[in-house]
Image 1 (cartoon, rainbow, N blue to C red):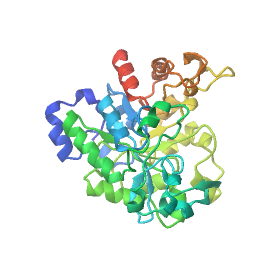
Image 2 (cartoon, one colour; image 1 turned 90 degrees about the horizontal axis):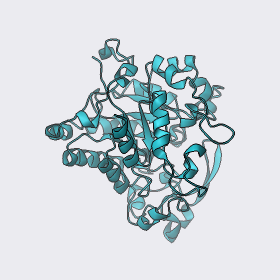
Image 3 (cartoon, helix red, strand yellow; image 1 turned 60 degrees about the vertical axis):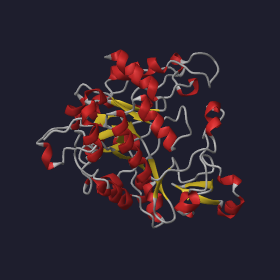
Length: 380
C-alpha cells in the first residue's frame, strides 16, 4: 500500500479528534524495503499535490529555538511538521537542543551551582568547551532557561530570553497532539538524532529512547505523521529495522557522516549524494535532507548558480527531498535575494523559495514558516 504525504489543506477539521486519538495519523511516504509498499516509492508520494513545510527548530526566526513557544508558533503559522533535535540528559531523558553543548542556547553560565560542570569534550572529533546536556539530570536542566542563539542577527528574539524551559521530547509530542486538536489539522513531528555516535560512546544511545517514545505514543506506525532524520548512516540503517515511519538521510555540502569517520570509512557526503550513493540511501531511507547549496550552489558573487542533478537523482532513487535551511535574513540568503547591505535585514525569502521549488524539491526546513506558507499559497 502506497503511503503519501497529505497536505494540511486536504485534512478536514472534522478529522482533528481522530488526528489526536490516533497520534496525528495521516498517510506517509514509505521506503522501498517496506513489504506493505507493494512497489510504491516515496518519489511517487512526492508527486502528490503537496509541499511539506517543516518548522525548523520551531519558529526560530521569531522565538528562541527548540522551545515549546517556538514549536507552537510554527504550528500556528501553518507548519506541517515541527522539528525537535534530540539529545539526552544524564538520566537518559530525551530533550530538545540543537547541540549537547548548551552554553549558547541557555542561561547555564549564570548558574554558579553549575560552574564546575563546564568542561572541554571531543564532539565528533572537535574540541568543544561548555556545558553538556548529558552532565545534567532532567530536573537540573529544567532550572535553566533558553535564550536566543544568534542575538546579533535576531535581536528581537532576545526579548524572550529567560522565559522558556528546555522541553522534553515527550512534551513536544504532547504539544503536537494538543495543537492538532485545537487547529483542526495534524501537526507532525520531524525529530533528528543529534550526534548519535557521540552519545553512544558515552553509554547514552539516543535510538532506544526514541523508539520507546514513538511506541509509547502510538507513533511507530506507517500512517503516523512522523519523519526521523540523521546526519549519520548506521543509526538510520538500524532504525530502519525497528521503525515503520519514514527515515530521512541528512547531508552537507562538506565533510562526512561522523560514524563513517569514526569507523574509518572514507566515504563523504558527496559520495552519498552521487547517483549510486542515493540508490544505496533508498534501501534504508525514504527521503534526503540536503543543504540547499547542494541543490543550487552559489557562484563567485554569492548568487544562485546552476542547479545540480541532486533532486532528479534523489527522485530516481525513490527519495523525497527536503532541503535546509530557508531563513529570511540577508546573511542567510543568496546575494540575488538580499534587500540591502545590512546582513541582519530581511530579504526576499519568497524569491529564494520559488527558485528552489522550480527545481522540484518536495518540501523544506524554514525558520520562517509564515513566509513559506504564504509562498506556497501564491504558487498554487
